[in-house]
Length: 393
Image 1 (cartoon, helix red, strand yellow):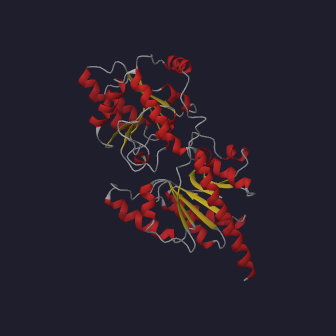
Image 2 (cartoon, rainbow, N blue to C red):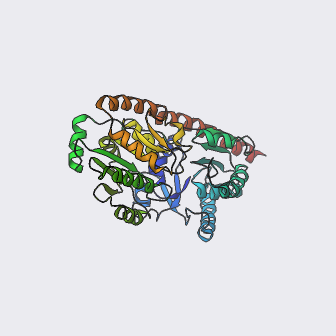
Image 3 (tube, helix red, strand yellow):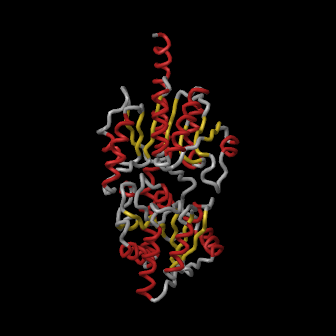
């Protein structure tokens, strides 16, 4: 069973893992809140792809105690009904409930992928007080702990896992470099024309859910500073792909800052590779990222990234080499990065594109798949030993 909080997590991030498990002979179940997000298909799509989907009332926030208590009981019931031999849990609340449920279901091997601990360097002190003791305690209920950046790997070394447990670092969910790659010049020009973007305009693109952590506000502030200094934003266009509860607030900020002519909210899109291929740069201002696949996907298409400095982007961003990196709250910095991008010559863009593509190569999904094959094979061996010795005394 793969466990997460939302219905779209599996086919967005874990589909390769589901395929690996099926190749090993496992029937794959997926437990999540099938009502979230409301704007995407849930259980029906997963079942059509051969995964047995189950709704549980899990909530993203650990403070929604009523729903998460209910989800814990539902999860334990699922683990006992089928029964589940391998439980791979994701997201903070999924990791909490999954490991608690696994601890009361004897014989279940528990894998947890931490997509970014909440007690990262620079996090509010309260985060370390609240999250670190919980993660340390839950590690004792974990057979395999998987992290996706060096900072979290070093933090995890202080944890004690279940007897015989292992800690692994993988390069995220892996990039599909056959999908995220530079667009042919002619195709790029055609798509820009369809989007209403001229060849001379600097087209900036952000991809991600519209929430507080994604920090789109800082980009709007940077654009407002450029507009004030220049007198206009002529020659600069900014688009945001994604949906979420911050959409209305973003629209209000855009109007209040006088950016309606230059900024467009595209909403949820399924053509992200081509949109990135049309852009001159991606803007990735997240306050917190475990790794940040949106940044890597942009680099793989050969465009620079104007990024916030966080433990995820530190894995691959190099200021001045494959983009520009600034403090997440530095509007002046982001403004400078946008101006530097807009001022690049054709030769500078070509050289930067080559460096961008090269910096994404180590995150090719083939490396993630190789590591996950090893992890699942070890988990399978552990299961077989348990069923042999557990049932023979």
